[in-house]
Amino acid sequence: MLIIIGIARGVPFVMEKAECKHLLDKAEKEAKQGNNETSAELFVSAAKCWSRWEFFSKAAKAYERAYEHAMLAHKYAEAAESMKSAGYCWIRESEHEKFEVDYQIASEAYIYAAEEEKNPVRFVDGAFCAIVGGDLELARQLIHAAAETTKGKAKEMINLCLMLNEYHFGDADMYIEAALTRVLDRNAIKEIREMFFLSFAAFVRSSLESEVAVTVNSLSESTGLDKHKVRQMVNRGIVQGHIPAYLDQDSEELVIDSDRLDLSDLRRRKRPILSRDLRDPGAWDMQLDD
Image (tube, rainbow, N blue to C red; front, side, top):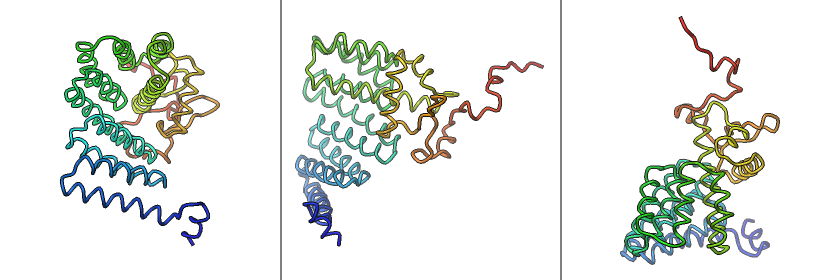
């Protein structure tokens, strides 16, 4: 029955899944023979195949295997791209920590790429990934390395990295419009805007873990972005799975979505006390003296 349905759609469903497995087996065979570059390419093909059928955890693992063998083949930039793709797949499974870890690993792969290619702009790529992955110290180191070794257009990118690393999203948003759109092409700007969004989503996730209450208003104040922009990006983050919460339309407070995040796990990580958890929110700042 599945095969009949698949044929009606144009591609047999079972045959397509078998193709994913076939690609994976070929990748493993090439890996065992030490053909790392070919193996990496096949793992990427398998990952894309699994993604088409929304087997995102399988896709993520295949991308991570592609990273391993791309690194062995000294294809460091390709390895970094594979880890970023793996991260996107983990987000589809609400695995936010794995997403961040994969971006941290991607940032380290870009360090190797900078050395291998003698291209210091790769330090900037690594800094962006470190910011998204939440490793701000590594991001600072890479920003410094980039500033010491690059010239020209990369200087604008370094300035943007500095703003994002300090969570100055309002300044960064204006800087993209005022400076970067003049020196970068459309595709590069598209990539920059995506990194901007991912950095913002990472900031919101960390705020959910550390703040008493996270609202559109508080995010606007802390980031320097106007409320409309914050609301727009929060809604996008929720829809795409980058922000494990939903937005209360009355209070405009972000409420943790238990379907996307294990609340017991968040409590172990010192989940923030939200305003609705407080019997008397006004008592939060009281000084209890003897």
